[in-house]
Image (cartoon, rainbow, N blue to C red; front, side, top):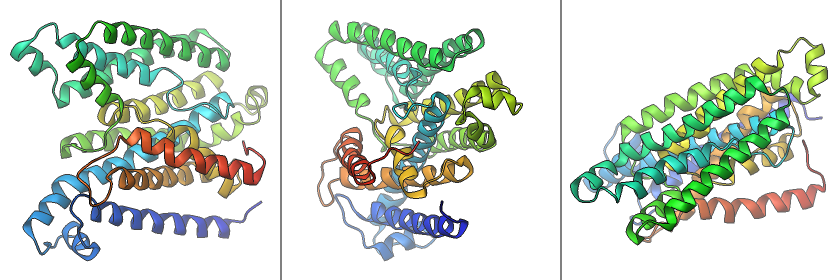
Length: 343
């Protein structure tokens, strides 16, 4: 069992690593900017070149903030789902939220082709994609919440969420089959996930949703600790299971739904980061795990985004591919090294 002092050291190291990854992320890209110029640009000064100011403030800083919010939010929502269902393979999208968002975007992009011309182009814009994704996630959330009040077993909720995901994925497959190549390519690019091209208004909305979800998660810390001991034991401690389940699902939906709406479906982070944090912190106390997972998720996403930019190259790889290629071997190495899955 690790001491409080050890946790403090870990948190200091993680915060310093996060800050360093943040500066490196702003520095590297198709145009390399010295870190001291980056610091000047983000802390009120002006970089030596006007173009550097534009690149930092209008492009790289919004993307880096989105990476921090998306990585941390997805990691915490994955932790919530793994604890609620007591399943190490659960992630933020097991309730079908990602599939619902994909259905909303598929209906917009693949269905807009039927209108053609100016109307079809007007329907598919930055905010229309965000709204369609959010509506798709919200409709699936409503269905899951209705089931939550009718079903007592949390595993049944997990299975029903997976079934909702299968149904929406089937509808998307049918739409894709009958769509033209241009619209299908546009939908596929959205499904790759993207942290860039975010407006400051969009980041503000995403930030508010992320902080709301994290606030609910922190409020539920003691309830999450009790759930790890089993529902019967949690009931004997006076825990209201349905209300707790409802709050956890709401927190996960707000986090995963808003991030998917603005950044697309980003895989792996929500599933793997909680395991990475557990391997280092060796605790099941969510008052420690939630901030640890939050920082680890943000750090991992920043590192993956930096790699995805292919520094000094004009190409940007899909963030989904990088999160899986970088993160999966790390988790496999940790589990093989520790020879035990902490849960």
